[in-house]
Amino acid sequence: MTDWNFYSKTYDLMTQVTPAYQALLTRFSEEARRWSLADGATILEIGAGTGNFALAAARTFPRATVLHTEPEKGMQKRAIEKAAEAGISNMKFVSASADDVPLSDEAFDAAILVHVLYTLPDPISFLEKLHKGLRPGAVVFACDFGRVMNVADWRRYLWKELIQRNGYVSAAKTMWRARGVFRSNEEVTKAQKAGRYWTHSGAEFAEAFRNAGFAVGHQETTYRGYSDLLIARKAS
Image 1 (spheres, rainbow, N blue to C red):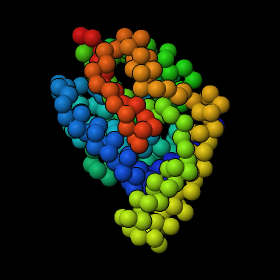
Image 2 (image 1 turned 90 degrees about the vertical axis):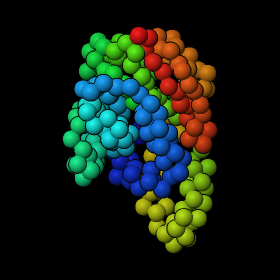
Image 3 (image 1 turned 30 degrees about the vertical axis):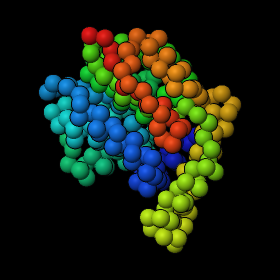
């Protein structure tokens, strides 16, 4: 299985130089600015990793509390460091897997799920649990890695982007430092092909949310065609 703690050591290096990831983060920030959240609102991110999306939410809603939940210590340690470096004080950190996150009935005003659902043993049941944990009218930003990863495709993509941005020497150094990420991505691919990770079409992704009781307001394909993104709400 994928060693996410190992992955965390070079995760931010790759997110910083990957245009597809930066575009997704920008897309989230644009969407979040449309949310009407009252002071004191609580925003939940499941599988929040090193905190890039949770940090963006905390900046957008300084009077809200952002709950960063992540089971891997390496990922969460980096998120805590980044929040401290940025002077962000409206985040709370919980070390917990998605299935262990305390989802009390109608406790949260918004939820963020980025590239986490596909890794869960039972993502469909989790969406039903999440629905119960959100207040009426709560919004969900969900993006999930639905198609089988082609690691060679990602290597070529990043290599070309890095050369254009920084030249051959710097690109080669970055690719060498990120070799662990590619090894981890190969494990993701194996898990997808073996059926241990959820793969889905955009239609299947939206159907899972609707079946859990959500209203899907917008849907698109992102992350170079590998991921499905949707904005959903719990009925008021």
